[in-house]
Image (cartoon, rainbow, N blue to C red):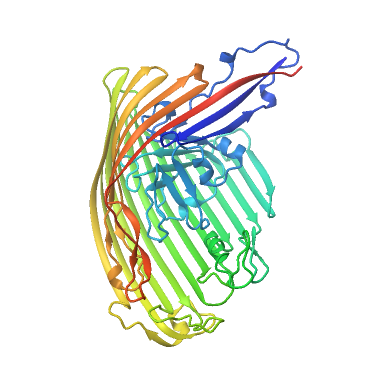
Length: 627
């Protein structure tokens, strides 16, 4: 007899086909696929085998076949993530054309890029041009989106501005994590996996689902990862780069009645890392004795990096009658990050840096949607967002002289600098999106969103030019006796700024169904990235300058097709971006520091981005004789 093996392959080509990758996303060879032994051997017709199937996404706040969504989108299922052992978002974006996610400095500084747009700014007040969403909740904190991938239904990656339905800070696109929800079952179900690897890596992931009653179901999921350091610190002989991660998610689904549901989502993630990749790469070249080789480093300070993210959300959905659906998402998230780093990257106690950040955000969204099957369908909503950010960044030179006798506290260079600020962000938006079917084959979708956002910042700057360091208190100004404060104007003190922006974003997308399996579309979309303030001060309060929003107009022509009786999907597009007021980090001369330079966040000039993408998903059917 014969056994049918299904092999799914994905070919992703990005930026005019310059790069391409081929990867096997899934290999099904389970006992459930075997033909019973009592049956006679027979050849199975390929068209009778299960195809790629309809991938259902909710990128436009409706359940849709991904091939019918008129925008560039990639979805990766939780099953594929588990099969690949993927626990980092960068693994997902490997399967996405023109997308990348890297953590060059550890989980505290994720950097996202879609179609070449992203940011390398690591300030606590940074807003990414890639919007990160977890179960429909926007996460603004830069470190909140770098958590573990576990027990997910799928991840959706949208490329291009998503300013209508998703709103601000999606000029590059949006990434939406969608967790597996509680389901009503006759008896409890669940799974557990254990992994081991190099450097004493130990991972555990598990989930349990069950119904408490006819109206209440729960699901709990957990992920743990521990790993010893993969590098050696020559200064003390210890491993460098240890990692300890813990995450959990607990959800309660309640049926209020036949038409209304309530879902409570409680989640927490903890990251404890020893050291960061930045010190590793720099320290190996700045070694003073016994130059480090390979991944070794040479630091006197036991570096640490700790992140804690806790949150809760309540999602209400209900039938309003007449085909109208109501959705409410209420969410609160708190994220903290503390890190200590060696400021000189040598085995000598010369310089150190310390950061302590806390983000507290509250959001509320209401949506009403009409029957999607009507000739005219629509979605309308209101979104409110509030964030309170407390940030402290300290850099200190804790000794006056180097081992060779040279001065460590040089003229013009502060022995101690503390930048502490509180920034409050509050925004609200009204949005709407509608689709009109002119014929069975031709329809037009358009959307409009008005956003009003205000940011307030209160900042304190302390700079000490020289002083005697008190061991154990280097991160506090009171830790220096005989302190001499920088006498230059605006070198010490406080300042405040407030700014409000009102923005309109919109899109329009005509689409045409050439055949039931081939669709084409043209999409124009306008997006914006929030304005803010340059908090990367180097020497003066006057450097706290306004940063205006950046704007992007996108033009995209795309084709989506399902071929070979559903065994092949081929999607392609070309796009053009008109980009202005780009938020970028510029190197500028510092004031009164001997010609040094510092990085500041500012608006740059206009730019253009041109590209093309090809995405192929192929399900091969192989017949194997097994008897």
